[in-house]
Length: 390
Image 1 (cartoon, rainbow, N blue to C red):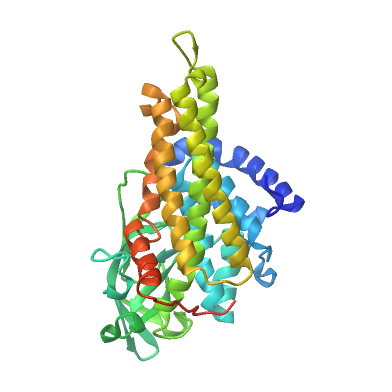
Image 2 (image 1 turned 90 degrees about the vertical axis):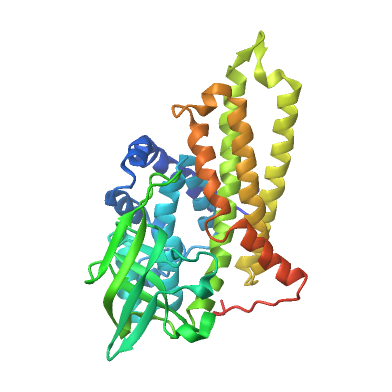
């Protein structure tokens, strides 16, 4: 492992986390994939180990650790071979709690961050709607001020932890005529009257409960507004950088893990009297993929170094996610092919890995949207400014 980015303490953390995942997660993944959700107890165990608060302030029970601990977390989680499990944990600590920590007031942080870091309160992030995903400015869920409350109506879809979470960090329109400048972020408790959810059946990411959420005249206290009213779009765009970097890191790690299990299989599988890792066409395919993985990994790690230094990496994070998730699709596809018929069997790791990888080019901004963002910066000279200074 490159010591230029990771110090000895990061490697010790990596070993500890890998051991924890091997004991508490991997033996149960197949069952959780069948269940379509993960048990609340696993959040408690993550909380007890401090994993849910790596980047959060010590004041609320977090570790306030440097960014490389989070990178290790993304990379090691990818090795459990369940995109759904990673998404369920990540939606809580990477999305919901990130917004509360960045935009929340002291009362909100004490109410949601402390039990969230302990794994006793689970959050989700709700932006995507049935009529629009990547086009955040066009969302239709409204929040109309009514005295000391907002009255919320609308729906969200494809929401990870959308059924079993305790609270929802939702993007709503507080000024419907102002497009992006009329969006606000709101904390909505799950047990609020008028909130309902339906679980969705997916191609992959089976272990996460992905839901469609409906808001029917939901009354939310004004005190549940996150940050400033009508600044939500800018908060979402700001956090897209860290989300896309984490997805890029995870995608590269999936590619690495796919190569690892494939090389092991190739060293054992025989055809025509010799191990298949001796066939030149397969050896060269492995070499090509390995080179691309190393190039992507170095790019992602270098961006994390810049992100740590405070750079606002809209273009670069978009590039990283675009290339890393495309690579993950390619590597898992080709590695499945190396397994032959066994690659298509659920008893072997590649079927799930390939299926789960596909969501990488959709979630957190589709590849097409990322290309458009990059095009606006490179061709149109568009600039992006941070909503929150680090």
